[in-house]
Image (tube, rainbow, N blue to C red; front, side, top):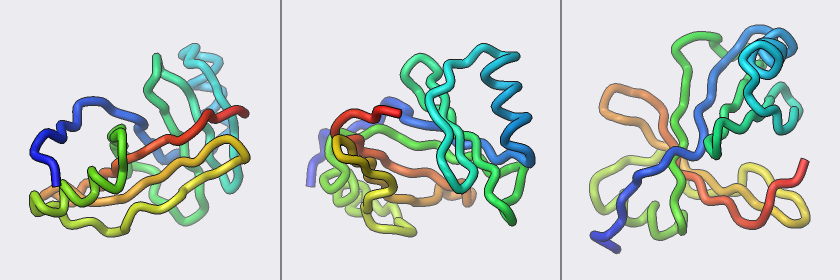
Length: 129
């Protein structure tokens, strides 16, 4: 597709936690990170100067060594095709993760050579809690 694609910004970092309420207290109240919203089934989103921090307390999910880096892309379909052409093997095709009347969040997941999960993300519209 495009040899001009450069990934150079992080959209979101995900951290697994055992106790979401305690984690919200720590990140919001102790560290002072701006709290955006809490979503079922056990997710909380913070804003770290434009980079989202997502806390995840989903039952059965490991609580350590399970961080995910999400990279912003301007057009997820173009980025997906370009990265595939570069040999990146995706575990999922681009799809909507969350949507509201004025917002859609598209993602596609892949792994680095060491098995660390990564994703490309494309926000469309405005997320309003």
